[in-house]
Length: 67
Image 1 (cartoon, one colour):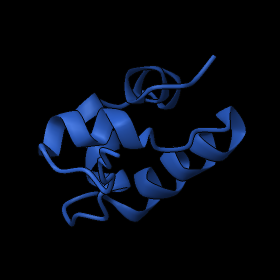
Image 2 (cartoon, rainbow, N blue to C red):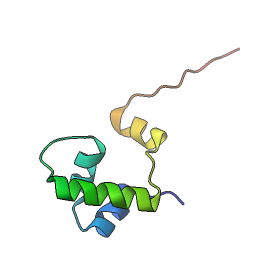
Image 3 (cartoon, helix red, strand yellow):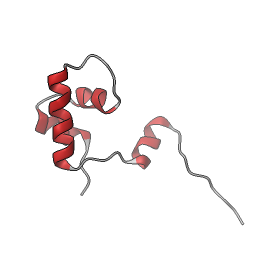
């Protein structure tokens, strides 16, 4: 089963917004917190879900082909 940002937030003891900031490499996160979240991400085997991301951004890298 895949890991989501809510589960990472709970395990790291931070908010989901903080996890999002780290995943998107945004500022305003203390380095200690950033390292803790990155450690949890690695331990839990998180990887971004491209399809879920495309639902949020409304962009995709897929091309449809009709023959």
